[in-house]
Length: 339
Image 1: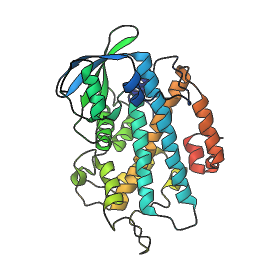
Image 2: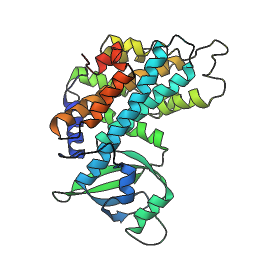
Image 3: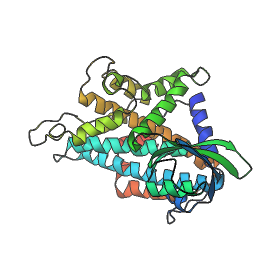
Image 4: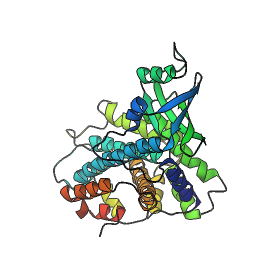
């Protein structure tokens, strides 16, 4: 459903490097990235005021990343189920809260995609930072609690690799969007990866800068969420019979049309330099979220084909489709290619 060319091939290669062959992640075990920092086997090789270098087992870290990918995929599907219920329900429901649901669908997909690509964004509290620091030097930590980005530096041996843990100085939500959308934008602007026109237009749309005049940078999805949820009296106006986001028919729009067509239609509503309507910003967020979800699904399916990963997660998700009657939804059938 999404165009595939050099950009997709690059993303697939990153995922195959991050998730080695033969990893088995049981739904009953807590192999999360957070748990890995507490109980994993690694050592700290260097540290300064902005980052640290750790040496870790590639298979073990890959297990933690895949464990989070599976769970974040489930998180995203729960939001999808709520979006479908909102779309189909004949009762009056909160459009303001549906904006928040759309946002968290997008956020869980973004977090999962970054882990799939081996570039996770996550928060480390003061105790975890202190524990990591103490593996290298005793005493006061040179680093603070905050949002970190994990990046692979180089392979040290057949089983070990060096990774950089960088302090972003951003909150988790803002850092997630800056890393994902900013990272994808580099492929759009790179002549070596932007040779397929349809694919380049697809990722150019996902990483559009049309809202930068209003929101400055790629933090804008989080800021849209904040407006809906925290600006008193703005998005929650059911009692006054006012719907500032108009999200009722958003999900059903994806029953027909290609991702490029959907994105083009909503981007045209958000013209750079103009004061855009909040509704148009929400619609753009919705369509970018589904587009990122499709990228996530396609890369995950490549892992299923090329890596011997545990398929119980997929079986459980398909059972959830039937239990929640999601498999009857026309848009879901298109997105997941359900027969």
